Image (cartoon, rainbow, N blue to C red; front, top):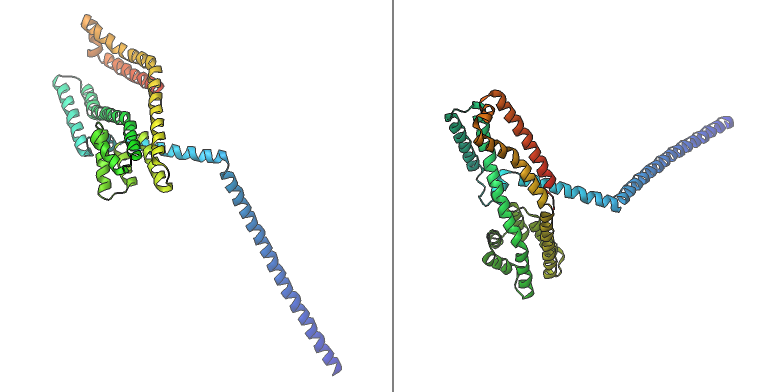
Length: 326
């Protein structure tokens, strides 16, 4: 019995020790896993902290700002190159369908006139394409550019009206009404639409965004940013708008200086671009028989097409060289 009892006690002791050791091993492996997870988590936190610190450096912030400005510039270019945006900037509404109808009628009329005059079909087709696709867009672009220029030239005076009105105790809404009554067109019309939109319950930010869609200028964007920041943070609005007016006037002065410095290059490009067609026209008047083969022979047609292509390419290159961004 003693041997049996001693054997049972020994078995129980060995089993208990094994169970304890096995449980201790599991807990040790669990602790090991937990330590690995903590180390990995610490590594991820360290990596995130280093990435955050790298993003907060001046170079990273500068790159981010440049990237944001580039994206905004590309977005603005895409928005201003559409037909609807050009029609809005020109003050012609947003009837894009009517624009294309008029363009098609113009192109078809020019093509039919040239066919009646017994010109070559390829020449009639090219002239119809240029008259229908290029001429209306060019006219609308010129109208939009002229209207935008008038708006920009009078915009700094409008800001001065707001500054003087705020200093005299008038609210901003009344100052905008004064601009709509006293300033020249198209500035007055755009501010009247702005006042009407805000009077109908639209917020100032939304009304200014609508105004920027109709008149996409950097000056108006600066004005919108100043009003938005002042509405969120507070501060002296008259002083902020006064500083903006000074910046816009300095910008206008810089534009005039650039035009003065680039006037010689623009005149040279204009003369170089107009010289070959003028020489062809003069020779056609003085000696028509000398230039007649260029317009009657197919080889002359090819030469004229090649000359027109290279002239257009040269004019485009010169325009890019003298078209300064400011």
